[in-house]
Image 1 (cartoon, rainbow, N blue to C red):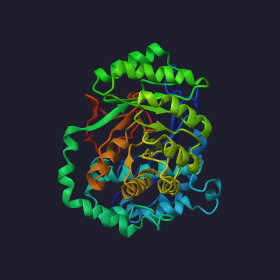
Image 2 (image 1 turned 90 degrees about the horizontal axis):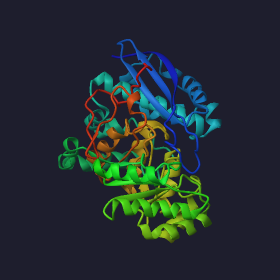
Image 3 (image 1 turned 30 degrees about the vertical axis):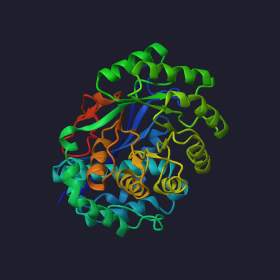
Image 4 (image 1 turned 60 degrees about the vertical axis):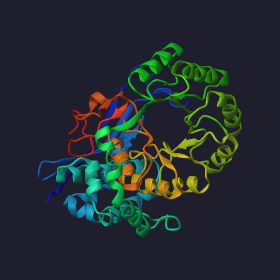
Length: 411
């Protein structure tokens, strides 16, 4: 048995190259991780990440220390055998819950803790995260999940049935492990990049084998968005998918006007078009701009809000992020919800694709979710001990034990 003997945290912040990471709302990001380290008596360390843009990262680390205290002194196998209940108890801390509930600083802390637990579990068993998840029986996996507040649409029993239903056909989808999972390039279209940089980046992405890329929009002058979108389309042609990401900048009236103006360049989706809590605005917009789909999830903090978006038919591409919601376990629950509602899961990669390269493999093989693509942002890859590898526009399947979360210099 591997026992957790000590908990520590790291406030890891990384400065980006000029213009990188910018969007219509976030103008000076500092990519950062509130990092959980679960130290053990066997010398194995579980590493968990939650993503921020710098400010307040230290506060998330402090919340991690408060929430994770009950884990110290317990074996990781014991913890994971009842992890659904453990996670629920941490999320419902009788005092800290008031700071959420299930959102904001405390939920980011929970994401980091949960991800550290799964990383440690995979390392203790000597397998990569994707294999750990696929090797678990449906009943074992369900024990790690929290379905509270979802009972009218997804129960633990239904989740287990969903997993069991897809067991016989897993081999039909396992070729992804050798072929790799397709990616799309976000790094070509940051908001503050000049047109010439956008053009060069789009050309480079296509040459590297990417068949999809993303452009940041949401300018004060709609004409700028239209010009840049048409520029990208003219550079990459009609066969490459181009997504437009607003990062919540528009009000609903603005979104209606802008989507009408941008329709002719055939966006593959419109991402985060307005405030992330406004379910009804997204519902209205989804109806008005159809068949252009809406993608969202980067700032949707929990499974309950995801449920509401799905019930309202306000989303097509579910961008759940394991370093934003309550970690890997809540990510899996949201993915199961998407499967129930017949939607597609294309994660936002606040982890820069490190953890999510494992999770999309699980989603496709175990849940039968469509293999779409996974976001690629390369700016932090040199800071990871085992950075994700992308060849010809596809993520190679990671082989190292754990969730690929170990940061160089933070262990």
